[in-house]
Image (tube, rainbow, N blue to C red; front, side):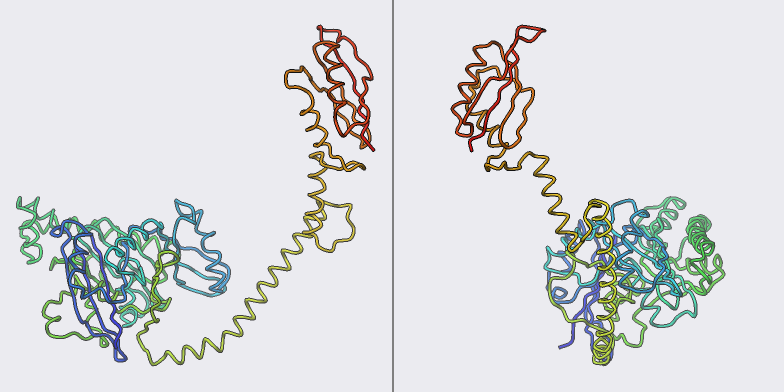
Length: 510
């Protein structure tokens, strides 16, 4: 039975869904749906309406989060090994993002590799991914892949080979836009802009002094009249921000060639003159994207009649996205990853056996490389441990097991500092102190100023209120099972005050 895959595009104003069946020859669009969020009341109600009839529930779900929720950074690492990149990228990014690395999910693409790796990374707060997965879970839907904004559409353009060196995709939504810069090697940069189709509609409404709904109709028909000049000003401001981004990337050396073509998609691009304005400003050809035009995507007449590429491109790109790493970003990771054990789906199933064979061939080599790396790391740790032991215990000349030897040294030092050493009789200092505390009544004034224990005798210097109390203390301690003799060495009045100072000598039983 062909695999059903659902591309779920959750926007600000609407939710778009495209369900495809994957086969050996490609993808067939089985069902599509578009639910207006404002009409439904909320995103939750819109999803409830979408999944109500059960058409989309029994599918592998692929969705995205808006680009504005991510932190994008370019970094360079002095090695090419992907395992090392995965192990170190969080530490490299932490100083560059406004929150601790353990609070975000990180994914990346490699934009160029020579003697080092040029990496374009994206990080998103775990709570944002958690909120999305929790929302979908309410409808028993589990996202197997969570991508970024317009990246899947750009990846589909990449597979078509639409540009030789560099292309720019602008996904214009109702309130926000996303620019994706891509080249023949993959995604180069992503940028979010606070510009959407509603800004054009608002300009029309304010200039012509008409209602927003009427202005939206005029925008889609291109009947803007006197508002065209004001619309051009608003659009050119957005175009300038895009152009400044390209120039900044050129100055940083992140962009070697300017884009040779601009691709336009998104529901906010429903303005017939927008394409012409863009071509004039950028002096580049501008193409309206239609993902369904790909050779390996088919759809029936019923679906085709309701198809609007500008609105549905993103959902279709998600549904036909490849599972491999080079296809883009995936933040369905760890606790937010799919719990069900889906089979990996790929565009060309005929290569599955070949891929498996290659994996088996390189497994031994990869295992050896990992072992060699881990062994080197272990040897380095052992040297560091030995170095620490030599500094801590320079008197030890023979080192057999530095960890165990250091534990013994620490235990000896701890016991010595706590006074837990046993005397020859087996009596501990803490036992003697406890017995003294038990025998001398709490009401007795007894201040110990000096306490020594040499294993055979205990010598106590102390203070009390009078000589009778000294006798009482002596008699009380004489009842101890630890002492065979308790004697007063001296007792005298303290010069300052009326208190009595005394010395006691307590002989331990043999």
